[in-house]
Length: 370
Image (tube, rainbow, N blue to C red; front, side):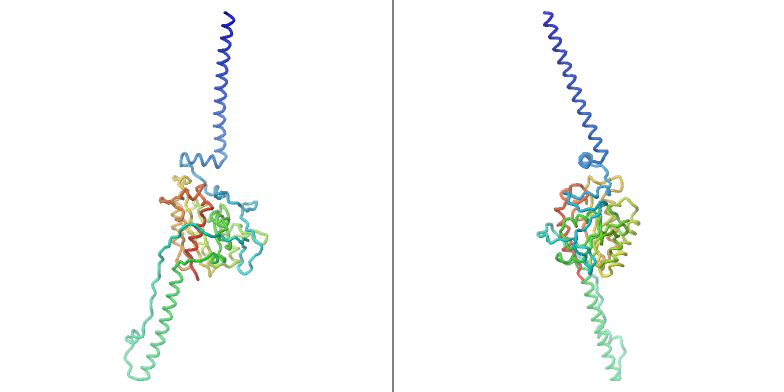
């Protein structure tokens, strides 16, 4: 009897010890998972940060630190310094552009384009011959009368010529037209990772690209990001060497927290002045910066779409609708609240590659021909 009791007590003790051990193991595993998650968040693991941001919708993100993430893992052809080099066979000596070698033409571009009413400049017709005659005193001498008639005819001819010229300039400068991809063979795109994404999409393979991930409006002209003839040169120097008929610019989101609107306007004005000086015959397009998604913003700081919208408005005021035109690229991917719609992005900052045709389609329907 005593032996049976001892056996029973031993079994109960063993069971109790087993339960304690299992509980300790479970607690240790839970603690280990918590430590691992904390380490991932502190080291900037993108998946962990995305999950954490989705839960609280308030995690601030540094734009420049995330600019290198092109949506959908676009295949990058980069150098050791993160600069995008164009694959090319020849340097076009006439246009001065280093072309990306590609025979593939992308067709069936998706997306709808919106046709916007454009401002038409009123023309001032010249004086007619009847108006001229009324202003001149009556002539009694036949020779004088003949001379007056001849002068009136010349004035009418000159006035009509001026009117035709004004009408042609008005029509030429204010009306967007539809074009084909050939239109971009003498175009250059200047910008940050959004422009790099355009290049990597290969939708406009004949265009030239002066773009670098993470670059801002304050350094776009001077930083050496253009690879040419075995060396790196600045955008300013590249523009002085080559000739383009169209210049597309999208810049400013990477230093959205730097300076105020006056500083931003000064930087953009310097860019436009440099482009105008080096490319006097070019049509310049200011492209509105694509917004961020809602959860990517820092609502209590400067990294938000409200601040970005103010800068887009400031750049829009620099367009004169004659030589410089503003394109509403910022509205193409925005939802009803002005945020980058989730259907177009995976990281909240960049447009997914599959949606770049919407951008290209807009450009094809908003072109100025000279």
